[in-house]
Image 1 (cartoon, helix red, strand yellow):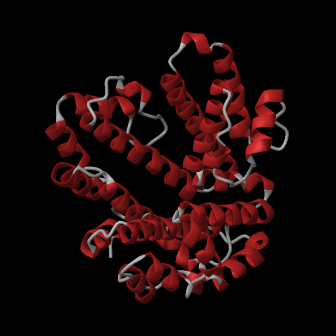
Image 2 (image 1 turned 90 degrees about the horizontal axis):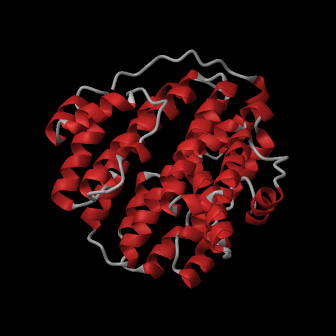
Image 3 (image 1 turned 45 degrees about the horizontal axis):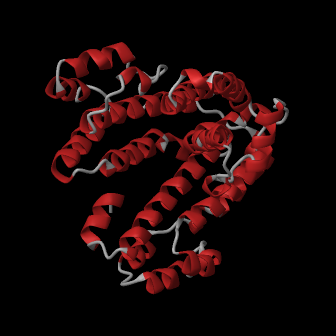
Length: 340
């Protein structure tokens, strides 16, 4: 992919926040620490090695729960707090764009909780809002303090709940996803950032590509219109046209796009190893390349965005290493999954 030279201007408002994050750059795990994690023979050794990192505070909880999601939830809560305190109100959308999958997950959890009249708080990811505050907001129809994207989606969800007898719950979830992602894309205009705007357009394209492959692989009965989203660089109608002509035609045309590596390596692994993990690995590398020009800037919303995207990627890799260690997966397979 050819790198774009974005005109990114420094913003003195973020001078302190970016300096704070720059001081934390050394906390990212270098190759030697990742290698030590990979060579952990068992869970006890993994936790011991984790104790030598910035994540040492989770050692006890990890030993008792044997669940790395606890670490991820704890780190996400810290990130959500940092972004809420440090970003301009007009830039809060950046955090929601970065964590749109997690926020969408939470919205679906609230939806299921109300529809099924069950408590799903244990599945909730603490990030920008608490489980109780979101559930109270949708029940009372009061959305003060929520982002435009979340409040608009809750209004949409409320209307759906009133008509729940008319639709399948699974279809309703797909409709929530489509609506929320369109609202998130709309919110990017507030940021006045071409880089973050292009980031979310790439996210939508890659999500559509993965959904096409998942639909084919799982022989999904529902039409692709439920799974595909507008506002990417690649028009949905064009992707459907390629897909309808068969997998070879679809792959041939995707090779002509910026997503060639993602599609070629992801599709190959899906055929040979029956896994979607390579799509995600190549996707992470793609985003790292997009954000590379930021190293020449000092303080702006984009640098903050990049720092926490790297943090998300690191946590994802650690989760893969933890799971591989827990279930005695071959180290080569784990390395392939995280790209080292």
